Image (cartoon, rainbow, N blue to C red; front, side):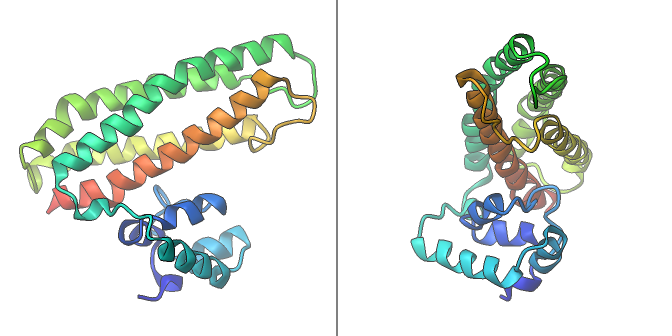
Length: 219
């Protein structure tokens, strides 16, 4: 396989460690996973061959869990336990921190005005999304549902993933690309680091659903 001409989503599915490289270079392997490595790197203005070398180095570490080889029910459980529960743990304190930063540091350079409201909307949509997965789609997949019977709910989830990606872009816009200002307090610093973690986890989450879980369910 030539990674240069392979879609990012396919690379991430076949070599899970590649997602660490993509995250380092801010390459979208979840919602933008249909673009080849060459196309994504050209858009980002980086050297695709250098990224391909990094992919080889990550593969050599052997630190891969290939979820494409795991049963559907194990992947569903992994998504809930790692990503859904992680968001339920992390998002409320991050929203509270954003409100504190906006209140205490109002008027200071680079204060993320409007961030807390954006996070509130994002979190509300994520809670609805996760509930639909846990109560409707995931039980179907655990029962072995495949083909036409899952087409409609899968399409809904994929469409909502695109909306989540738009929220991530908006969060980066409001925070100056999550660049921590030199005058940032401890709460401000922790807020941006926490949002960076949420972004990375959500991209992994969407990738596993869009590129592994859903294609197998479609049959």
